[in-house]
Length: 176
Picture 1 (cartoon, rainbow, N blue to C red):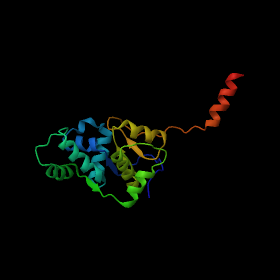
Picture 2 (cartoon, rainbow, N blue to C red):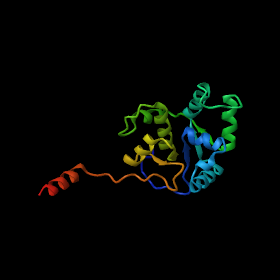
Picture 3 (cartoon, helix red, strand yellow):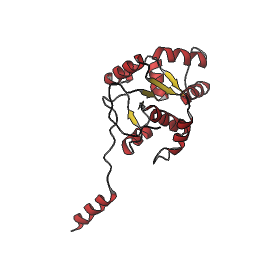
Picture 4 (tube, rainbow, N blue to C red):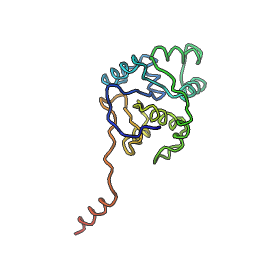
């Protein structure tokens, strides 16, 4: 069952790393992470609670094939080495994740990989580490996934939901 509670982060939270965030850690570019987040991810990794979505392996293979990611190993060897180096596990594509990725509330996002990554984080009750602006906006606007931008000291906070009727009342008062 997906976690769309919008609950604040705790020290025991698992993490799902978006593809670029995982590649940053795998390539020793963890300095792109705020020190607070880096410590939290390392602690969760030591407990076996850091994941990548199954689709992330496909995204890495596609980046390598298109020449956008240069690897000194075969893609398969790189993935295995990176998983060990980052203490990350692959979250399998469960039927619930596949269905949730299609039924994500209030998000008309077209990229199926992003949808699967978001659904994986929801299914795991994890915080999604991402720089993807569309996902960060979704986390802030809808609160259906918890997210953390790597360079920030704190996770994204859901924006306060406003009742459109309150806005109408405010406009009416302003006209008086």
